[in-house]
Image (cartoon, rainbow, N blue to C red; front, top):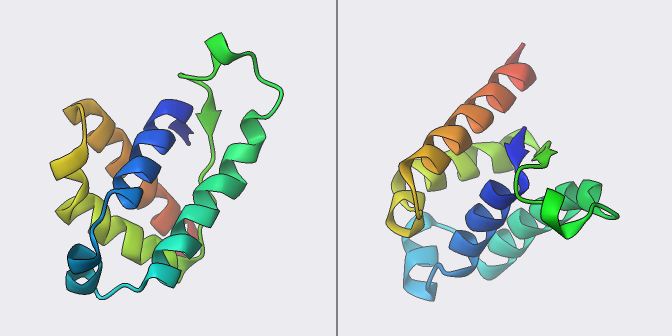
Length: 105
């Protein structure tokens, strides 16, 4: 579970990746679109929420293991370059690690 604001910041960081950075990550534009689609699908849980309640609304990010691994690598290597605060990085890393352990167990 991540606050809605963290999910939005993570998604914006994915959108900001340049074509050269995508290549370095070994990703295609289709890979990035698929990852962003996971964020969009998870964010649907926020529909109908009052705008003032959105920032801290906990959202479960549901991602297949293959993409979870990609997001973990991105969060460790690239997200710190785009993040606005260290606490968000810690929350994202913890949520992705927890999701990975749930899938492994």
